[in-house]
Image 1 (cartoon, rainbow, N blue to C red):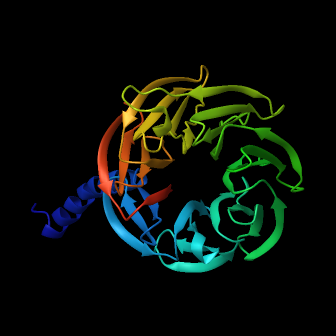
Image 2: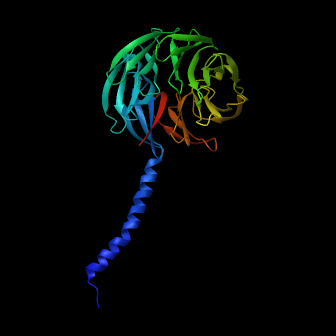
Image 3: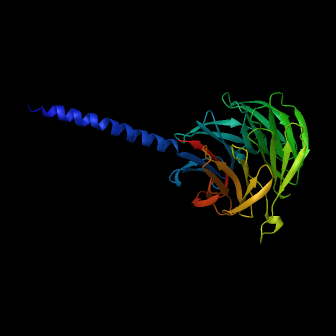
Length: 335
């Protein structure tokens, strides 16, 4: 008996279902591995958006004047950037790239950081020696916390109890209770501290000193200095080795340190505080940002106007991507 042609069509289509489902799964998996890399361009008043999978520039967001510090908020739905010369922070949608709203700050905001719970936000104001605490949803200032002269770096402990701010001119790391906003301790570090980065377990804070040329490692509980990371690069003078950005892997084993005009990123063993190798990147490497899966690390290279891409597993630089003028901050969001 000859089966109707419709039966063959149905069978054919049924056979396609597993194939289509498999294709969709592969597509979904592929997209899950792709991220959006947001880079603030200080002298172009833009944010460059890079696709982490194609490593191509896919969009440019117009911002206020002198965008610097940049972070994610609202469960990755927002990217917040400090428009330093406009004395405010701006919020953009990470999916549509559209402007959402402004957030208040003090004069010349430089670096923001969120509380571990996602709100509030703390921002260092370079010109008034204050850290401003902001409710990101209400858009209001909760309070201001006095710190040292020219506050810059902002670090938040993983458990959300301790905020650390660095002051460039006072040369201190200020430990602040994240709930009472009261100062707990002040730790002297080397000249012109820039970034404060907690280790994943919260036991240590790594503070980079741009002019001092070191990274000071501080025990969180006691605020005692455990030691310092020093750098030496053949053919590079000491004054050109200027540590700024610091990022530590989730397993707490490896730290990456951006060394400014030395055009290198140092790979440091966290346990021994010894440099394992130096990676050649673009000119005046400033800040660093991991993809959430930590497969890639992106560097902002201020005077070569590009971003270097580091393969974390192999610890090799794999690509350079042109962005806007004077890239400063970088943060990575899921697609």
